[in-house]
Image (cartoon, rainbow, N blue to C red):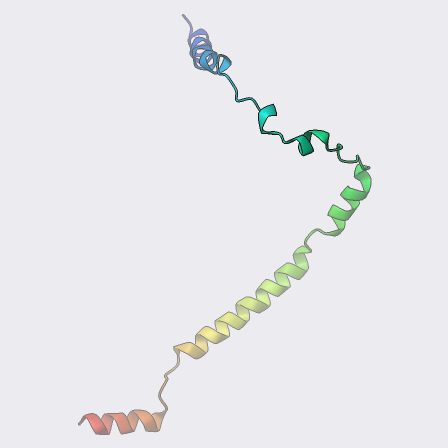
Length: 98
């Protein structure tokens, strides 16, 4: 047996049990209101595609917004890296510990 034949038989052996599976009755889950409901109206696809194209994200604007936010966060991080105490407060603390 060739490799191709063997792999085909293995695939068939795996798919055969799935073919015998019984599916749940879906009609019993549908309420009378659902069965009596009208199908949704079909609409032309061109206006939907035009709206989707108009609503797409502008890459340049998004990049500029993200760069501004990164710069703001980096500036905030630089401020947070500084000392919490002023020079006089540090001196007072050092004198109090001695």
